[in-house]
Length: 149
Image 1 (tube, rainbow, N blue to C red):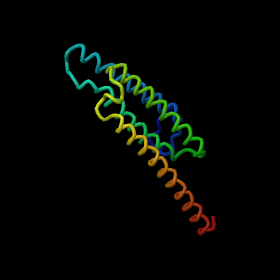
Image 2: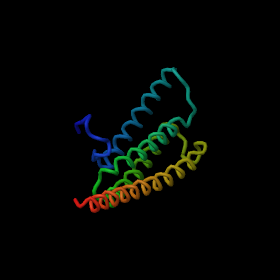
Image 3: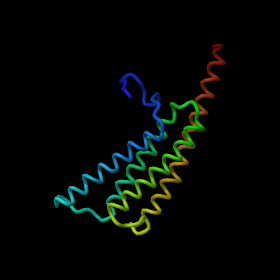
Image 4: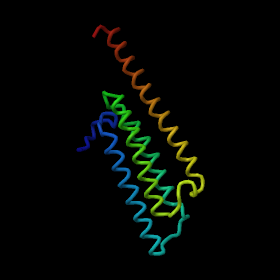
């Protein structure tokens, strides 16, 4: 995808699965670099550090995904793909964090509750964005109708 400096972020159409795969690759890269830094003795984070990375990027995915939803014409399909991609990303991300830390999500401090809050917040944010898009489309139609266009 070529980036156009004159194009708004709301005009790019990136499928949710590609967003999720990109974020998963970034999670793996950051966790891998952190693991190498730990083995080299450069820093010693808490044992649940991979969960911090995973949930940070999960939140990044949620926000980016909601912003990019404005460009899509078929909101129902986008919504479905977004939720499925979120579930896949969170499952694979948590699995990667488990492999890196050796802790289950229940053992890693309060990350089980953070996951619940992020998931609930993501669905609410996606709903708000979808509603905002409908309101904007309605306002644009009414404006065109009033102008006689």
